[in-house]
Image 1: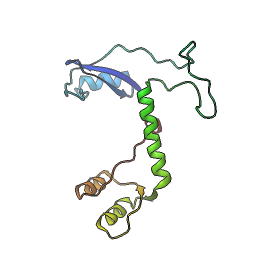
Image 2: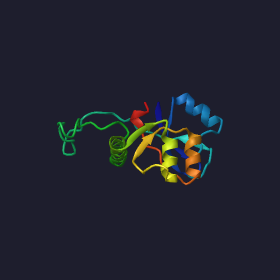
Image 3: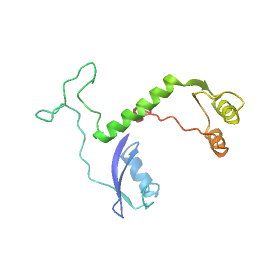
Image 4: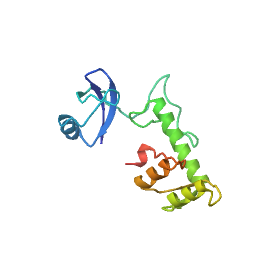
Length: 154
């Protein structure tokens, strides 16, 4: 996988992941890559500097690793804002998984029964197909997908 910083002909900059350089070229040629802001398909790669992991020396060096903070090396391509967002998503996920009951594939049925007042409300999580989730939302059942940190998708 490769992350490209892209720009459209209107000057909007954005990032997108591709399986490789050839995949970007093929998708861009077929007009499958579009700017998320203006939907222009006139998109090109911008100049990018490689991200190199390592220790920073000098006054801005990260603190040495310890049991509390872990290693002093940050994941490649993540600025402090993205690292904070990733930590927030991870914390939400961990809290839901630790405090809610896993009902597995019975999630749509259990959520609907709670919504209808057929069973007591409780914190649950589980799996639903896209069609099941869509039907729940259309019926006013308050559900939301559980965020998955990007590093768990690889």
